[in-house]
Image (cartoon, rainbow, N blue to C red; front, top):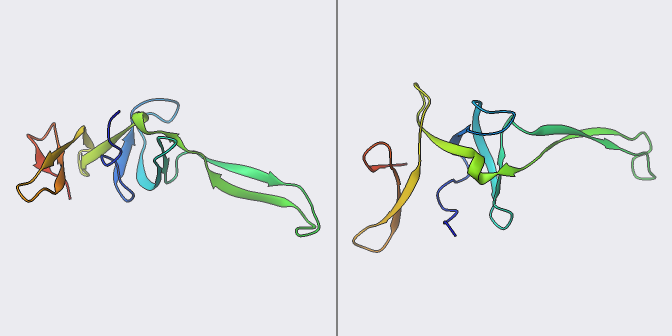
Length: 109
């Protein structure tokens, strides 16, 4: 099972599958146990609220719907929108570093 250290909160990703294919957005959160991500501006829906004693008027609120992590690719170059797979390499001191596979293992910040 691949590591979930490849996509992190704050990364810019491109949707590579599904109805929203081709759109880009920033990762809001990564749900590791469910293997899903929340992408800003993608997958927002209205949740209708029933009137109750705490909220007598009811109404609606916007929520994010998570999407599967395998449907996103990391954007390496913001100008061209070029994506890349992410690899992990170990440094001499034992730390792991993320690298872009399509850019000849260039380090990702």
